[in-house]
Figure 1 (cartoon, rainbow, N blue to C red):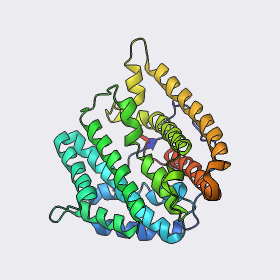
Figure 2 (figure 1 turned 45 degrees about the horizontal axis):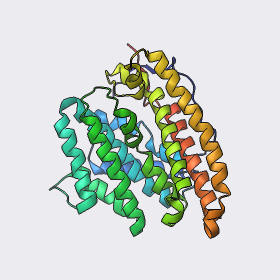
Figure 3 (figure 1 turned 90 degrees about the vertical axis):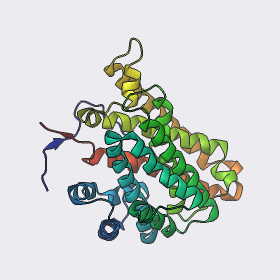
Length: 316
């Protein structure tokens, strides 16, 4: 494989999340099994496969869901690594043929809602296996369908932009980041929880999750900006704001950075209130555990994004 020298972004502000990052102790045991499983799925090949595996998505999941036991970490990582591969493959389709990207995404929506799979489709076969291996309860399966569909449809909307940083992206960004599924389902899954809807979908919990999603979105768009620009990609909230009358790229970065810090402060207050929420009744202890898992998931997501070379800029 040919390697190109790269560097992480040097001109972007440092953004830190106000919660410690942990790494699952099962990471080193799960990682080789995950690589073997993914290679056997035969969805990526050659240098694309090699480059993808260098991303170490097992570490990503081990940082986001550090509370998982070994079995749950492996099941979650199978799902996530395939999800990342789907995203990267779809992005390559955007560059070639927007219609083809839309059809690729639509096939997964059809499977989730109707169980349909096309003949000899390695992507859908691998995805169906990853879903079934999670052994979800009916309520958990419904959450997976709802929020994976939300991500897929968000990606479809963004694909229709054809590379233009439209104002609608300020809304769609919160869906294409993919954190809703991680927060609403997989943080409970890692703890072997299945909280009732009255707790998990309580207005205070909903508000907290949306604050975490916003913070992750702001952080990701600042972090990925230079790498995306180096590839000629402009669909980023920074570019959306910079196109507004009187705005500049520097002003946009400052605006996104300020929003990130505002939401981080807000998450700390909201988490504190949720940990002592009397309305949770007998579920108060499990709610507090879930809140810590949500904060840990955000911290792991942002920390992995900072340490990985996924968003490094190739040196000329």
